[in-house]
Length: 291
Ligand code: 5GP
Ligand code: MN
Ligand code: MN
Ligand code: MN
Image (tube, rainbow, N blue to C red; front, side, top):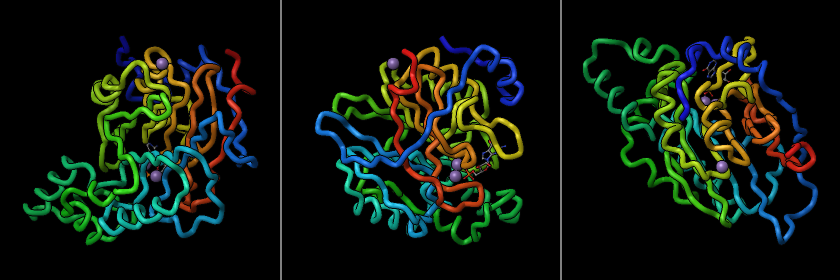
């Protein structure tokens, strides 16, 4: 059983301690040059595209399964979701899997309800309710939280939210939750609250998709602090041991690492300046892992 770490609330300090017992291998990301081999399944991973798909300057590699690990919009407005859905239709992949991130406000019913209640009370200005609107105009946020049944606009993918799917005998599970930061969607307190969501993930998952990184992999913020979830790392390493853990959220943590068993993929397409510069690549698992 995974328990809450003593330093759960301070991931930077927790990693200083935990890293003494771990190795982190950096893996090279390459754009695949060959077509998919008939006896293999290729996954192509992206995240954090933030409604900037039209600014992407690279080709998206073909493959069997496309994964998007959240933050596909700026604030979860209906038009943004519809535009993303239209783009998904143009992708050649046979299966497309999408999860939400903290920017998909309209997908988090609890966030929307609380926000609407606060608006109705008119006791606070919108700037007080949402400390930073991440540059989103207030009308866009109101529009997002007032959209009902937003999932109906995602018709060209499999949307996972604390749920899973089997493809080619590979068990895939997706969950949008992340440690609280800025008061946006799918935020939970570090420790018990986050762990309660990780506890829903089945033991036999092969590919785990979360929006947040775990501690120590793809979670180093440019300010020098660690933002990953301590209990997500413990859950992945001690209970799940999936083959791959795909996430995004910390844009500057883009890249692929491994602890020698699990391959951790921070698939953030946008960089720290919200410019969609990072390539959706592939890496050879066998070349780097000592099993
Ligand atoms: P987003 O707003 O797209 O979810 O995150 C954008 C950026 O905000 C990240 O690349 C990172 O620099 C910062 N950020 C997001 N979450 C956290 C967090 O939990 N802690 C810290 N320190 N920075 C974060
Ligand atoms: Mn993001
Ligand atoms: Mn397993
Ligand atoms: Mn995010």
